[in-house]
Image (cartoon, rainbow, N blue to C red; front, side, top):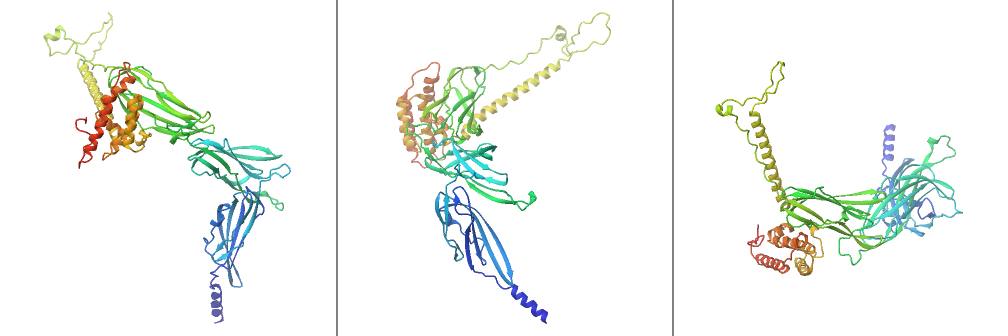
Length: 579
């Protein structure tokens, strides 16, 4: 009976509910004052039974950079009384120099006392003792243009080896940040003290203009804490260290007002091409042209599409462009590769116009142009079909008895030589070879026909991207037409062709479903006048072209489209102008 009562009493004592409410909350910091690049360990301890997520660090964000928060729980039973303590540990980095206040923090109704932190500048004078761990930051220039690469370097100085650690990337609003290469490690002596230096480089490409502050990277690591009372090194304990790199303010200049082309700020831009070595080509035979655009200090998304202007007499089948960005000598290098299949449809001499890409030189502050010079090529007519092989004429013996096979040719045998005379292949083998050659020729011809049909249908299936027709016209078809009208009256054929494609793209979007610009121009019946315009510029025998007739044709198409838009089912193209 006594044992049962004791068990019940022990159970009631152990089952006594823990204090559900928080009885006391206390906040402490590990150091004060603190240097501007050092971290503060804030410890908040709550007695009772609070929830692990009861601590809110948002009031600290005004004056500090808040790092990761860890939570630990401790339970003690003394004289059958259960006591629980929950501890939150947070890393804080001051945002500047001066006196800052850690406000009162609330945990389930209980508040801590405010704490004042004195943040002093970094002591780097000759009379000051050298620091064991610190971070430095630097940029190659504090003033850049929009989308221009900025080189950012962070160096971590360590007076002793670290057990483990991590270095975060810097932060900048509206910017692309990318690490360049691997870390560099070397030794250096600063103020008479030897350090192990870890250097990391970043490429920062701002995406908006104005005044910005690059927030320094954060280093968190563990180093060995030497204990003089410990004889053996493997019993040494580790110490947590945190350092914050200095912030840097930069000025990002906007795009100059006089820039009317695709904005491409760089130190160097080049155009290269891969082209067949021969200068003569044949009608119907495809030719592949590959053009590569290379730019330094930009990313691949900033590269413009290359202009595609060719004289009439060629069918063009562009492949999808490929882009890439690589790092070389701490500089981003972006490339765009465009491949174009060209099939000549007419014989004669043609001049392929030069390819130009304007770009802004950030070193000189002036606009420059990357060029591929114009190229003259000669297209020869298609060669005639090869005539089939004729059988050899019959001999007199074969004509007398056609049922007999052709006699084998006997080689000359020297006198005195005995043996069997080798026989040549029968005549039927020539016929078999002829059939094999004919079959291969038919298969090759069928392959060419299928290829031509595929490439003819390919532009219709792929369509044209909106980015192919970027320009000042925006998304207004009427404004694009007004621009086209002004260009036709006084512009060069290349400018007219660009404005014409812009208008065709916006006009084609008005149909349901939308019609690509290249299909719209081909179906509209304007191609003969476009060919005449291009011939005046790129043909070896230039002639005048009728600007007024081209403008009248476009106006007629717009009027016809306006009338058809009022019908229930408007046709895709005007009558009499479909192909």
